[in-house]
Amino acid sequence: MINFFEVNETNKMIEKENLDVRTITMGISLLDCIDSDINKVNENIYNKIKKYAANLVQTGDDIAKEYGIPVVNKRISVTPIALVGGAACKTIDDYVSIAQTLDKVATEVGVNFIGGFSALVSKGMTPSDELLIRSIPKALATTGRVCSSVNVGSTKTGINMDAVRLIGEMIKETAELTKEDDSLGCAKFVVFCNAPDDNPFMAGAFHGVTEADAIINVGVSGPGVVRKALSKVRGESFEVLCETIKKTAFKVTRVGQLVAQEASKRLGVPFGIVDLSLAPTPAIGDSVADVLCEIGLEYAGAPGTTAALALLNDQVKKGGVMASSYVGGLSGAFIPVSEDQGMIDAVQAGALTIEKLEAMTCVCSVGLDMIAIPGDTKATTISGIIADEMAIGMVNQKTTAVRVIPVVGKGVGEIVEFGGLLGYAPIMPVNQFSCDAFVNRKGRIPAPIHSFKN
Image (cartoon, rainbow, N blue to C red; front, side, top):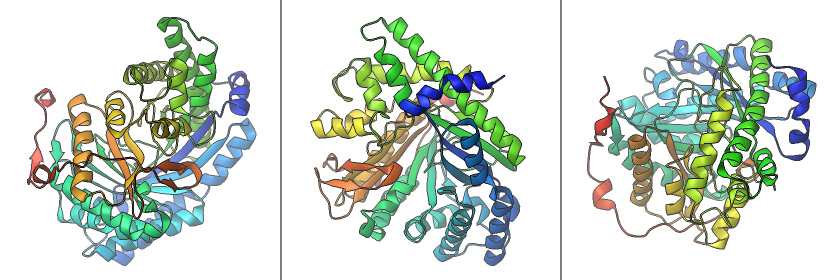
């Protein structure tokens, strides 16, 4: 099993190459909090989360100190709130009150984000689902730590275009309500196709209904470690390149496995999964785009980028899956713009566009992520961007997502500062041709033919 020798072997990675455990995320089921009285629902939610997560942050800090492994974030994910609030929530404000309860308890236990203000509507929307979606702008505008997501499509069911259209309008409203903070509310919302039940990363984390009452999921990250390893094999064959990535991913994932097992034992909560995604930060040297450049590209976005990213993603999975008993979540390479200095540089150099990013999402996790767009972008255009990305996920049987931020009052080329792990981003241009007639059709896009597997 895991031993101290393996931890010591990674010390240099931690000290010099930005290796960290990005998050310990405790998933908590709120299904037993359901009640017809909204006040009782809020009370139940508060008490349940406080019971399980009271020692989460301290445990993460203790593990980090004891093993010398940075544990950057401690987070909570909960059952999609549209399922929990359906019996009690009759108005938008009812759902907003649940968001505020989540925010309150998250603040008290000390986690930086709590995810699960969510709905699962890939085939259709219940009245509760629609009400939650309509409440998201106000919920995100009146809370600081709540993250929200909606799953609008899957390979088995197709894409719910009614939900896609509604979410385009909702994102615009969220941007407007949080415009004093450069439309920051939109950075805490993501729309999915094929959303996993065990994702520890925000803003898309929620606790799936197939999960135990509470679980511990861990997300590891090490693009800086991979880049450093690849710098030692410049000019070597693809075989050598792939072997280097696999071996590095194995070591990184073993660190996550150790932290997950320790957190599980100390908190008395079952270990769920390790998500072995390469998740960048704005820190210099902690960039997925820089890894792509080390593979041989001048900038991310140059010809060959999609192939290089496919190779990277596949080898990370092959190396990581051997290092942990349970790998899940998203597990791949994230390509957020604002959170990756190399991606920002590529955009500013003119090498990277939204269209190229969309092509890259065909081969990695998870999608169009943390992309700032002009504040005057139409709701239907945002819905069209979402529909395109959902189609990639549906047809390719993979998770895809969209997190775009229409920054009110800013246009192409301007810079928006989000702060912290969210970083900063140049406003990227979007295609101005209309998709109104397409988006305004009612109903859903059917599942692809290869979804029929029973």
